[in-house]
Image (cartoon, rainbow, N blue to C red; front, side, top):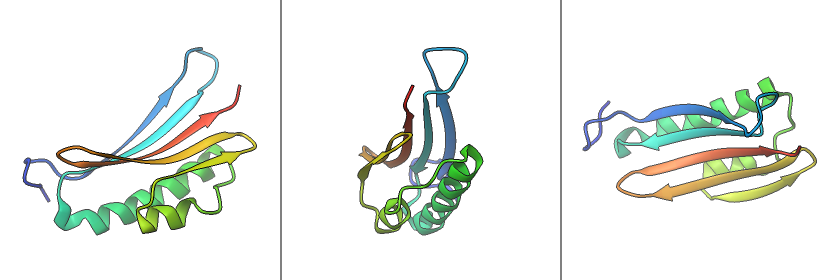
Length: 103
């Protein structure tokens, strides 16, 4: 359902790179536009995060899922690169799982 800004919560996936041959950064982004349905949105964000790591065949950092559940931003150094759970607070909350893959 729509929040006070007229938009529903939304989830997006971005792939970024400076070279055409491979993806260097993957971002899963959740915009919380409606606080009432935030618990449902955060649950879907957890499920999408798990599915993303499965699809990329990357091990998920041990504390990432609990950090999402506890809504605690955190950074994880992994063998394949860096994983960050970020929170940007503006007029809405924006959660991001950012995977920066080593070259």
